[in-house]
Image 1 (cartoon, rainbow, N blue to C red):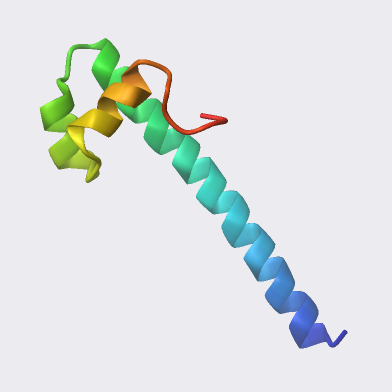
Image 2 (image 1 turned 135 degrees about the vertical axis):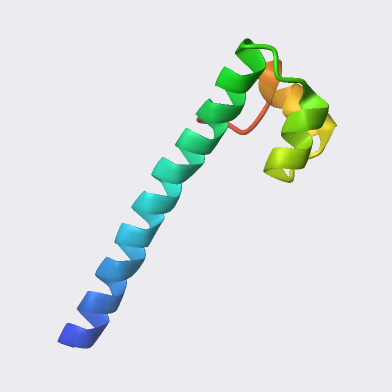
Length: 66
């Protein structure tokens, strides 16, 4: 494997880690907003998710591992 390939693979691993951390922070922010009374309609507009998906997150039926 060339140095360029190794660097490219490392870049992918780092980007995946950043994505996973950002995704966790995103869902955590949604849960916190729900906990302080922000409604699903407002969060739908802010997040780009449907109200139904926000409700699933609220009810603990959202994505696995979040």
